[in-house]
Length: 217
Image (tube, rainbow, N blue to C red; front, side):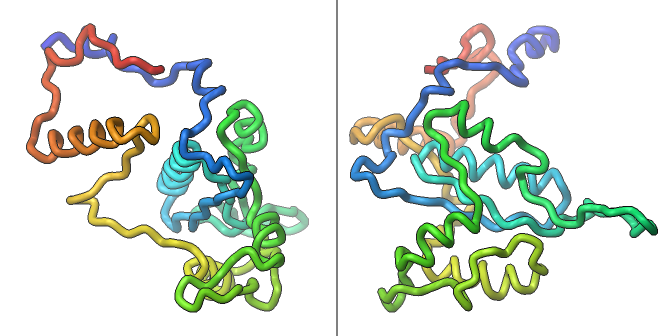
């Protein structure tokens, strides 16, 4: 195998203008917002970053508003305290990514903070306990968890969110997350067939992709 040919087929990053105007066919059309929240990974930065990028992709694919976790301590992102120096110990994704700029650039992405979400939906009775069906307010009517310790975020905020939101769970050895290109049933069938092909071991070989780039539109 010619490694040079393989290298030519690799794409690290490409600016695709059509991505900026994409809007998911699953975006609610009745004016009601749907949201996706997530819990920050407690591993190293690479885990934290990849988890956020995955959820952002899901938000775009489903037409949901992306709710960022509150500012909090992140593993290894700290320094020993130095006399007379102020150092940040709590971080949000806005400290590493230009989230507002990303949302402005992409028509199909809206990003808000956890505080905005709790004020917009939680404090206005928009969230219901999935088991009881009753409106459930944020614990202690608290909406600002920026800088809170991990115990409060985990035992109060995240526990609350799990009670008022669907928490998907699947076996990664048997399931994968995929989105058809439209609501049309034929596109759903295409995705299901692709999954069956993957399960049967029908992975593309060298000759299947060299010189045959995948369409981006």
